[in-house]
Amino acid sequence: MAALADAPPGLLILSAVPVRLGDEDESFADDLPPAAVYVHLVDTDVVVPLHRQLLTLTGRLQIGPLAEADGRLSFVRLILEAESSAALTRSRP
Image 1 (cartoon, rainbow, N blue to C red):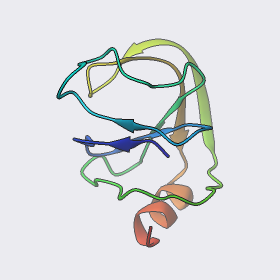
Image 2: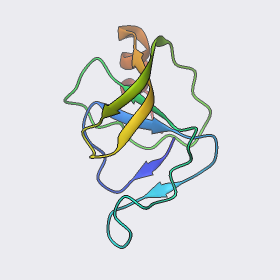
Image 3: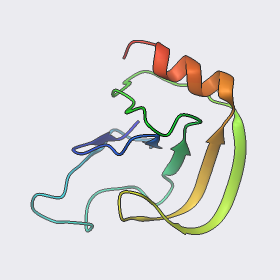
Image 4: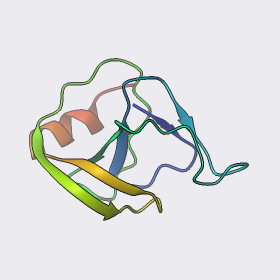
């Protein structure tokens, strides 16, 4: 999971490598890997704390460009099922 300086509610980014994103110095020219996947939760008001372990998530895969709430453009998204969304917000990082 990517560490976001200002994580928007209802959204997290999965990354195959550890990455910390912030807008302080380079704005959107950051280190987000091209294979990153945006994950949308069912509850859009919840900010997900950073999880450093492997995650197993299920949902519907969406492909194609979309402007995200954080201002970035995503090309791959996972829309979580309610069960995965609830488990992610209940679990401790």
